Amino acid sequence: MNDTLTKDPSADLPGDTATRYEQFFGPLFFEPYAIEVAKRIHSIPVSVVLEIAAGTGRVTRHIREHIPYSAKLIASDISEEMLAVAKKTLGQLDIDWRNIDAQQLPFSDNSIDLVVCCFGYMFVPDKAKAFAEAYRVLKPGGLFLFTTWDKLENNAASYSARSIAMKYLEQPLPESHNLATSMNNEALITPLLKDAGFAKISIEKVKLFSVSPTAKEAACGLVEWGPVYEEIKKHNPSCIDEIKIKVEKELAEKFGAAPMIAPISAVFSQAWK
Image (cartoon, rainbow, N blue to C red):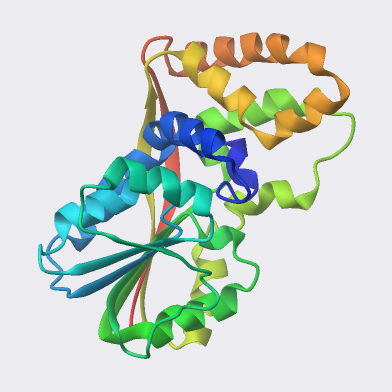
């Protein structure tokens, strides 16, 4: 996770951008939690699995490897560009790729054993409707498993990059830049699940680490791909190189120059129908 995730990272991305997004943010932020999700579904007997907000397929690959060979996996996203990257990467696997809006799932009631979504619901406009849809399509006893980002300050590399960037902004950021961390605790998530119909709920924070080969590589990605920096480029583009140097220095000092290993934190929510 980084400032790129302060708005929907899968929205309106051209193909080359989606590819670079996967190459940088995929291993740095999403792969650690993809592995963690896979651990939690490994022993669940399922015949039909739906992934929402599959993006470039980081989690999809792990789901496919940890569910029965005979099980059907439907991997969906609202962005055709992100799915195109996923299909190219995972084309050899048995996956049904779909362009789907989480707020309107095109499936029958009680037809899915497991619904998984990693770092997508923060950006869904009508969360109540989306959760109700997940509940509707799940079979009785089915599992709804999704992850959302913890507070920005608990995701250290992103927090450092954002803190440095803020000093170069001429005006406050719009609230939309905080969407990525807008579902960061149990008090925000539990009412949505209960209103959707879920009674058995488990929510916990899972702390892992993001790893980059070097602090310099991490700094370049965090600076070049964050919407906060897009704001800076509009008004003061000459500062970008200076910001990169400062971000690299802080990351190296706090988390190591090579490799850079920084703590990250996400909220894991599980609910059973």
